[in-house]
Amino acid sequence: MEMRRLGKTGLSISPIVFGGNVFGWTADEKTSLAILDAFFDAGLNTIDTADVYSAWVPGNKGGDSEEIIGRWLRQAKISRDKAVIVTKVGSDMGQGKTLKESYILKAVEDSLSRLQTDYIDLYLSHWPDADTPHEETLGAYAKLKQQGKIRAIGCSNYDADLLQASFDAAEKAGLPRYDVLQPEYNLYARASFEGPLADLCVGQDIGVITYFSLAAGFLTGKYRSKADTEGRAREGRVSQYLDDKGLRILAALDKVSAETGAKPAEISLAWLLRKKGVTAPIASATSLSQLESLVKSATLALSDVAMALLDEAGA
Image 1 (cartoon, rainbow, N blue to C red):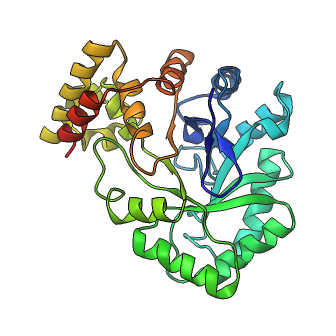
Image 2: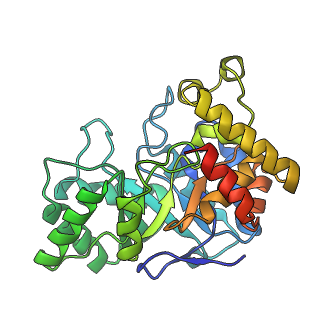
Image 3: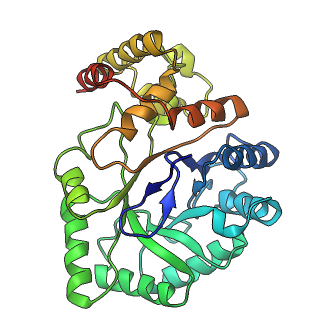
């Protein structure tokens, strides 16, 4: 599998990043471990998680996904340096969203313990924190990099103005900058990334790994009506895509699928891999058959005609 350079981080990541939000939620531990084995056996190497995953599940406390990944790392057949582990800090774990230095320095120790590792490859600010100066947050990350506990830093859910402000603060204070952005971006949700934010990422050589790459499963094509979503774990989120625009996108995916033999999910991820500024999309699977589609998408080459059709449908 051909790896992709992740901006200026020095990391090489697979063209598909596995989304670990399903671990301890829609994938139990046994399934999660089997999926991770198969993911790495297929030649992919990057797992995304967060300290808060999956606190929204009744009975979970947060850190559940990291704990499962940690148990996998302990028994995995690969050496630690063959895996790229991405996790995040700053979501509400009972204290509210915060990126204060004192919180980050404690949270990273908790994540390292759950992950059963000495270092995190990529550590992300999960959400902006208007109450904490960039300098304080980046200063905390600088300490962690010096201590060898994290290797690279990035942010999620930052717009172009906020990302530029963080660059300016880093340069002025002589601190490390964010080298990776994790934005929401998919065939349906395009406006927040395309334009100034994508241009900034390209201009500054920022690695981009997209989340909700399959629009909470909508772009797999298995949800065609409200009835299809009833009783599903993602019912509320998927339902929002069932409008005229969403149905146009499904029709375009069906057409490309008929021409290529690829599944809608594979096409949706391959579309992202050809978009300006994108390094790799994050996508999840809860079964080995779903994982097979993710792997196929990494090498699916869409024609210019197919790209234009999909672009128009989601405009």
